[in-house]
Length: 191
Image (cartoon, rainbow, N blue to C red; front, side, top):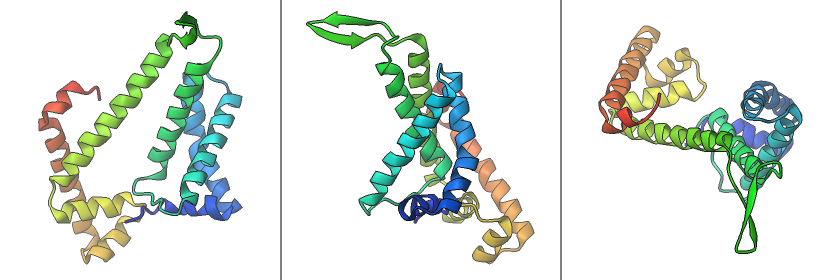
């Protein structure tokens, strides 16, 4: 099922300027901050944002692309991977020649950023796995509440009262946190 943020993918495909401006206003600050924090400039951030949106657009053009998670998370990961590629290609970083081929020697920042990316992916994988262990009612409630719908809309959709929906969401989140913390993988990951 498509996430409510599929509207951003559709806006890219339709060149909907109003929604694209909303996308920039909502998401560019986080990307810029990540790049500035990791040896980049505002120009670098602008380039990464443009290149990432273009890559997402090209992927969506294939016709089988359906966004199943928040756009924020997807866009951030695309931008972060692109920024890692830029850092690895910068000529200012040291290189060595091995067997006639110039090879990049990653700096400490690149290793840290790569490690953070891998940890983010491992956390997301753990979280997705534990969500699958919840009952169908909790999965539906959390999925709907994370889709961008208001709790009033979620309650109406599930035929719950507003108060019950909020209480049930709190219980489901509590159960999810409990499942994650009991997992052997939890202790290995930095939270």
